[in-house]
Image 1 (cartoon, rainbow, N blue to C red):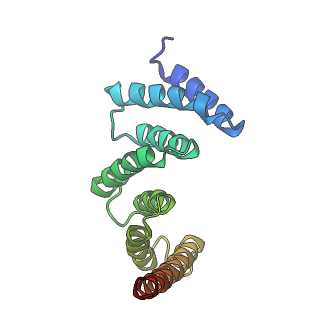
Image 2 (image 1 turned 180 degrees about the horizontal axis):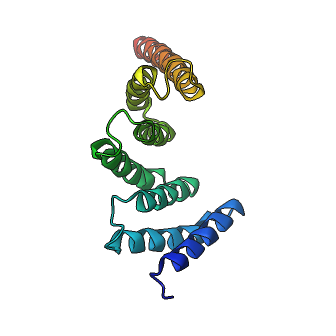
Image 3 (image 1 turned 180 degrees about the vertical axis):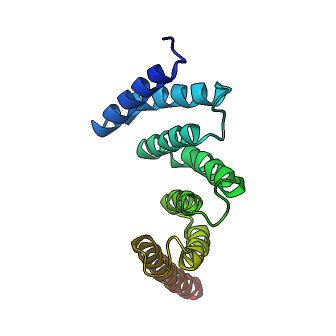
Length: 174
């Protein structure tokens, strides 16, 4: 077995998971990136294979844990796009919707509430219409709850901005 053998890659991925679980994402990240690159380069897998996508999600997760959310975001977006355009998944598949939720969470961590809310509303609507999820599925209910929390936060941000603007205009008149 060599460094590109599937069993070697599985073992290296296990090390990634163990290091991540031990709170050592900085050590896990380069190993995860190497495993992702090996899977992408493997002719029997490639960049759109589910195993490759799963490892790329781990890379994005580790980047986020390291505070490198801006670097994690394009990876998560690319994965969601692959799932959305995949004939095995498509735009309404539960895994695709979960991929968009990951993108929304990362956007939220970056303080981009408006974009997060827009994605989560779209995801929630799709979940409610999905025969696999439906309106009362726990994931759909959680998604709906997140949308309401985001709407509330957006309302508070608008109110805070209005108060700050009013204070500033009062200070300028004084």
